[in-house]
Length: 268
Ligand SMILES: NC(=O)c1ccc[n+]([C@@H]2O[C@H](COP(=O)([O-])OP(=O)(O)OC[C@H]3O[C@@H](n4cnc5c(N)ncnc54)[C@H](O)[C@@H]3O)[C@@H](O)[C@H]2O)c1
Image: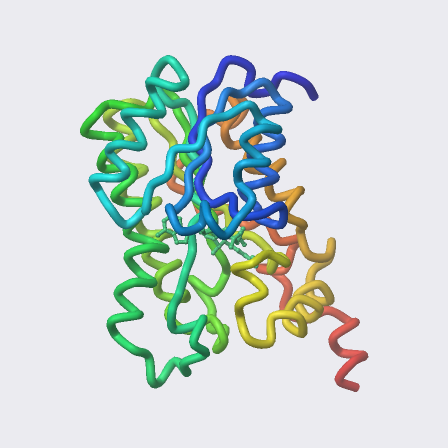
């Protein structure tokens, strides 16, 4: 498939290094003819290798802390200038929990950290959509995709406050999807991705073991970051125009499997 996103303009958040899901989305969107802007928190610019990605995709980097309405406003203003018009697609690929980073148990969460997790991982989507809505920065039939995880809906003890941040993210997808759909036929969806070996993923205690377990529980195995990127591209394309306000599982069948025979054999 070539030129799936030809002529489209996009903003891609969250590309930190080459393992990031957003990194693969940026490469593939560029391959498919899109013009993109890359953005990440100013601190991530120093830690990551986003400049290499910008060179590869011939894109501008516009730093923005996704918890700051002011910085998001600047992001939309500058992105429209850089890309020469309204935005056709946005990838929200942002997640961070200081509680997880510091390995704090769910029953003992630090509430300042908790607010940060929710602000950065969930409210940032509302802030982006709200700024874009007010500025009328997204074209008709534009598409916004946020990345989620099944911990939004089921209990995964190690996922602590991110469970609630993702539940809120999925709710924002539905509610803002309604308002933006009515206003300008803009679509908003979340993709609930398999465990994936990235900086955010590897930061979770016991992630490596859990990754293997999920792989065993999925008919097709875990979906890779690259496959996730391909799925996101279909949602940015004009072939999925009537899909909105959905949480779409991209997990090799994990979410609807009770137990696999491999798991049974392992326990038996
Ligand atoms: N890795 C997994 O197992 C997995 C599974 C399902 C969903 N997800 C989700 O996918 C998304 C991308 O994560 P990833 O796995 O590619 O890891 P990643 O660590 O590469 O990406 C997370 C990004 O969030 C950015 N970020 C953090 N704070 C920010 C802020 N204040 N402002 C702007 N950006 C900020 C980071 O700089 C980083 O680029 C996240 O929403 C994550 O929850 C990941």
